[in-house]
Image (cartoon, rainbow, N blue to C red; front, side):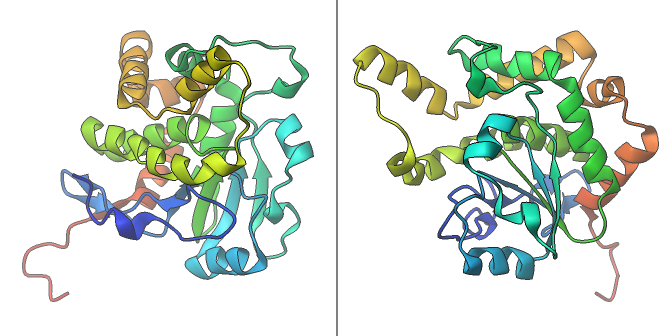
Length: 252
């Protein structure tokens, strides 16, 4: 079971899937609270929502969405004077333009992302490695697929067990119920059924991706090195994420 699941959600009026990646067990510690947050689209955030995230410590926002999504739903932090905003699109084409078509199969989509969208993933990890003090919030539209893959890479680098990473991924299913009021409905039962499949947060889909990373690249660390991250960047990501247990006898 995930520890303190309720406390990792950031309650906001204009977003539904913003949560902290802290508190996950590691062999010799836990992941740090208040360092990395994953989320869904931030374009509906109220002024109070924005202040809550800033007061929580957010100083860097990474927007993983493609240009078509930004045009219709710009991130509220894109013009912020208090938060550094980065657009690091996973898809380097405007998916809304219909120039790229992927099958409605999340296993295929996830493999496409790690195999064919490496520039966006590399840029995202670069930004996190080099980010100044303060929380980094990375997000896409639903906070599920692109965001879920980045979260899985980060948690794996930190040493979080695979079963826990899969449980974190599945938490989006809770948020999806709140999102449904803002999602389109299709007239065709067949199209709606396909759409529902794409809304799922089935841990088996992410497990298949991790198996793919292990088989094709030799694991997550080997994969991010292949992306071009340096050992020092990987160290800084781990340093940001890992909170070691205090030594026995520490007065704290």
